[in-house]
Image 1 (cartoon, one colour):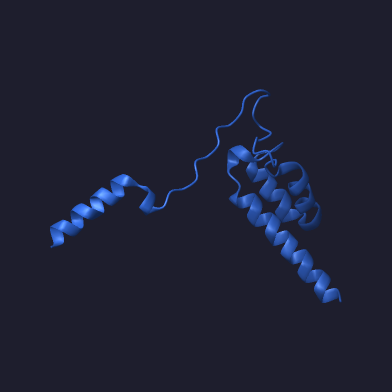
Image 2: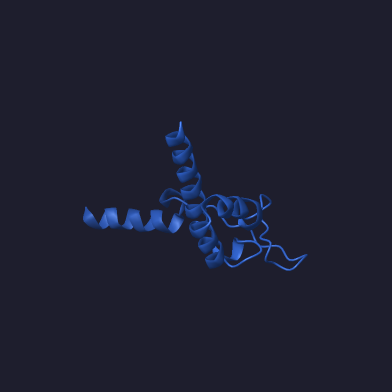
Length: 99
């Protein structure tokens, strides 16, 4: 049983640490990203809870570091090569050149 608790704590800590590391700087709330990473590293359980409650980007997608009333533009979803007309034209040209 203690082994399972230890593994759960390790999994929680790693999740919070990787989440803090991979979150873009401008989306972290209340503190700079580097400080959040240090907090999660040094305080595995409490730091992870603090990160999830206070530092992680809000569900609405509006980071807490922006002034009130200013909204961040939504990111455009990444496109695949088949969605890029320039890529398809270039691909057709290269295929014709090879023939």
